[in-house]
Length: 120
Image (cartoon, rainbow, N blue to C red; front, side, top):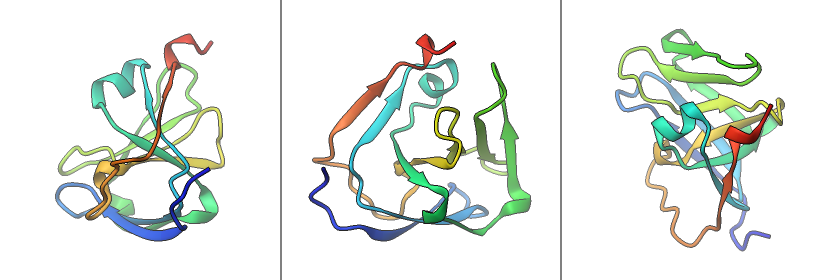
């Protein structure tokens, strides 16, 4: 269980075209070894869709799906940064790239490795 209080955090892609906000207490962060996550090297937090808000840039977002086509990986069409994705195993959640959150320091939050390469 997290010792942080739930709070609202804003974030963006590199160029700022895509802006979003999430509310979370950061119970854990995750990495994934699937073919796309290992290449983008993101550190993620899962956030329920009720705690996610796209503030700007819907038209700038590009979507990529692979393998089963369930997970929806979003990136900025201008700068190419991956800010979030719709999760395959929890489709009502977003996986948020915490490196896109403004001024966020992930130090001290437990990191769990997920093994996407082992999913069917």
